[in-house]
Length: 612
Image 1 (cartoon, helix red, strand yellow):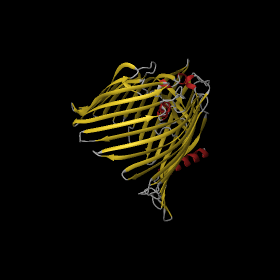
Image 2 (spheres, rainbow, N blue to C red):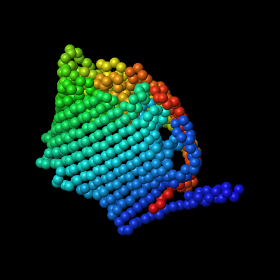
Image 3 (cartoon, one colour):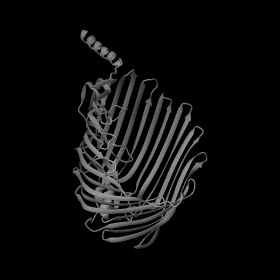
Image 4 (cartoon, rainbow, N blue to C red):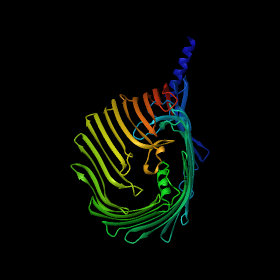
């Protein structure tokens, strides 16, 4: 029995040492200042299941933050934060993966005429998510790295110059799915500005490349989908003040695009010119004017979607296209919190071998004021649209309202918005949508109860099958710090594109080939319970469940994911005693890999240190 007693003695000694205070300060030479703090932990952990290799062992890990400066923080400062064998996915629960990596950032010449910065980060075996809008995300695991460097020249009286470069990569797998996904990206951005004789002048240059490869598991395809985007361009702008408290600006931009998405190729150059002016003759009246021209409407559609992470594949892209908008707006404040506006717009487009023109004119009113002891604001806009090629007039309508109020111990709030025949980027398509939500909160002594709900639906007026809808409900209650509980439910149906980061709702379905779109939908719910019954003690647990399905050209996939997470923690001085458990079940019918489970647990002790 001597061996076990000796081991117990060593563990007890180590625990007592961890409870002792630790603090120090270090100065290296006259100019280098350093500060190091962090958490060190150790304990027993295990992992098992169909999706991961089984293991049981004593583990040690921790994280730290080394900060410092040389000469002064404005001359050189840095922050280095390594972590080893730690859960990077959630600080509240035990994670299936225990990741390692570091984050580094540094600034040089901060506050001077030549400031710069550098950052670099790497993560190994980190837990992440594959996004599904309106539903629970799928769980992933993989590696990633990012690097960025920036520098500026800001000398008074000379043109400013700012340059930045970034590069990143990632590789991950979705639990329960075949294959791996990967992505790389890099970009260069240069900007300059100068003021001469009252004219504010600017120039910029951008160059970016991104690639991604991911299995099309949600649509039943075993092929690896690939995307490649290579964009570069430049722009110049000028602006000047106008009489009557006004401002004018003129901008020109050229962008070259060379993109591939799953066998579809887009290559084009787009030149855009935009100008705008505004004046304020009186304190109550403002007049605005704007005009935009694009010599390649197909490329403009593609560019607008890329900004949200979606690549649009425009059919017949080789045919010439262009677009021009001219609009004027007058805004008048009738009284405080009551504002009216009137507007007129002319739009002209050439697309897919046809020419389109449309006129829009209308007005609106905005009101915000206290109402029945609460805060109320609303707006209403009405517009009439006419299309040159059709003897048809459509009435566009947009309204929204928000109200919040406290009624005794009750807190209530609601919001509502509705739109019919709202303009999209293409003249021939209009959008309609509605969404509303509400929440109620009630406090009785030390007991708090709350609930909320939201509903939304959107779609293109002239395009059948483009509707998307979602609804969600939530409820929570709690008594002091003793106990709190919450639950939620969500349901969604929409069209989308599968990308390396997840499913993205399509903003312009009319110009995306139907074989790239998937129809997805499903339901998800979750419950959670937590308690901090006494000082230093925390216990929490959660369960989430999601069922979804996807369909593309007659081939679909049924998907399921379930997650359990539990954590118990007690703090004694600077020592934390922690125990946790996590379990994941995830599977896809389109995958050759059967649904599987992955579980992990740990029990251990951690200690916060301020080393120096």
